[in-house]
Length: 100
Image (cartoon, rainbow, N blue to C red; front, top):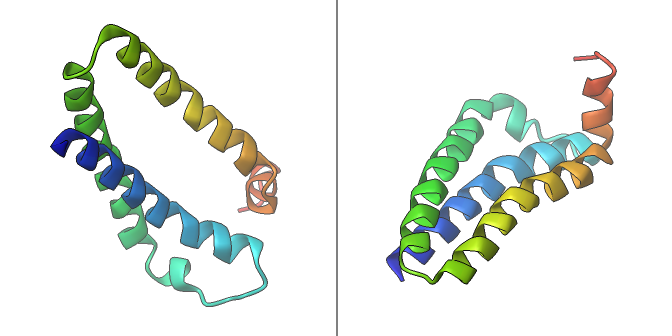
């Protein structure tokens, strides 16, 4: 159970680090929260990646082979799905054209 909690907490930290930038970029609400405190959000993303990685490795050691394979597929596919969703974002397309 602690490995599952670590993996989920890591994922939540990643989400908390990414969502404010997405909201600020794609809404007309300009709070400049992410702009002023981006280093805090980036550190949340980094900590989330580390915590979720350790949590997933520990969790995978406790489950059967079939479950490990499903976990590996999910870990591999989830970022691609997130990237495909993010590509639809105006912010990603804006940066892809070279306008920072």
